[in-house]
Image 1 (tube, rainbow, N blue to C red):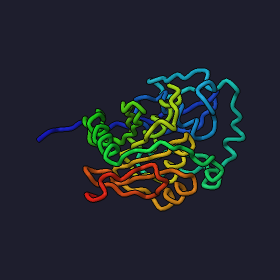
Image 2: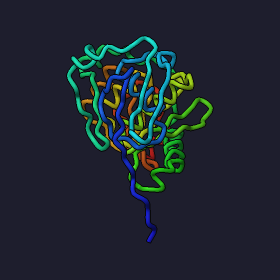
Image 3: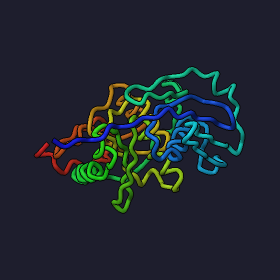
Length: 248
């Protein structure tokens, strides 16, 4: 019998300009990417230039972020907290009403379903923490040239924050990227992806009813249950071409 290691999670305290935001349960890999992605998703930064520095102290578990334009904790903490669903529970300060104000996604890039399934398989083979523990979520971006970048975490929403953060730090154009995730697509995950500008999201599992409603409103293409040669389209904006229709 093959014995896998146990997935690890750590309490990470996020501090912004000296103010403690919250304590998050995270896998302590790619925390700089997570900070960029989380702060962008929460509307605290608009670009990579908004962050002056990031420092993580492994001894204390404190992730210290310095923003160039300051930080008003009273405005942020006056908002109602919403706890995200699933493992590695996090906290978000935006509501469904806030999400409805996001710009609708615009992209003319299309993908063959066979290509998405191929990249989903490639993603699965390039997830080292999952291979080691069997208990990690992952998020992956497929670049225009076909290359992939993978980020993993105990929480599916954290993994999405990490991959968004990587894309922000490296200056990627969201219109040229395909987002794949191992986790269920909930409304907060859909909103994170839409805010960044992903036009197509693929998952190995389901999307919630609320996420699908939001995807239709924000013009995001969502395809679920990407497994082998199987797929279920939840929305249809002409960006995913089913070239396997007779087989699915």
